[in-house]
Image 1: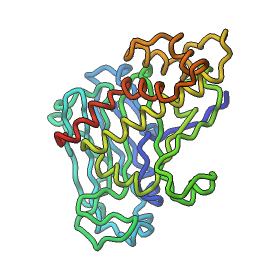
Image 2 (image 1 turned 30 degrees about the horizontal axis):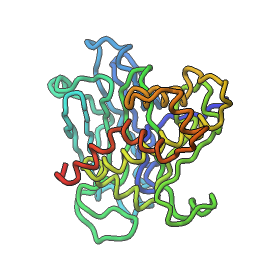
Image 3 (image 1 turned 45 degrees about the horizontal axis):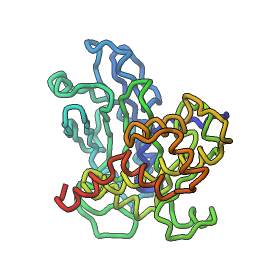
Length: 311
């Protein structure tokens, strides 16, 4: 299978022209490494005593003019580290853009507050210094980010997530879809029972721009998490329906395929056997049941129920 090369993380910036501003920002986990264009790092291959996180802060501020006529004086650069294993999220660096140092090394006392293990994410973002008059499709609230670049730590064996892209209504129409489409799961390959290295080689999730922006604003809240869980469930259901539906009855599910990983995940979470799942798809044609199993697999009910409690 031909591969699609990705060097970016799965988070896509909320404004179409923001990418260029931070395109040359770099990160390295060890002082022994050189800066390169990677955004994914495997901490298991680095001795913890050698971890010296450092950022190369090269910005193209000329690109700011394409984002609501912003200038370097309108924004600040912040670096935030999110460590889910320690339930810690902290802004570790904030600086005006027009006087940035070339690099920022995470101080030892700050570094020691984090695990630097799989799951940690370091985000470099430009945020508005002051609120502005609201304009459709443009940032206007103080602290709202206008560009962001993420660097993620995870082991080489860790399952990668699916990429999410921000689409305009015109892009949906160009694919023969309604302009008011909320999201579309776009499969690049119909054959889901072949070995892959990254699910992003197989599919992507395309979100309508205003929906994407709303989810970005709510990404840390219960509403954002609930919506993303339901989309994740829809992805699993689609993979099961398409993957099992495209197999002959005597075909075996190949280890290392996207279908294999999804079937294994659903079986573990629900207790259903592979035979049960095949019968639901081939014999009984129970797409609704497949969706229900997928929702249970990703614990969607838990996140949706938290809406009542406010998180």
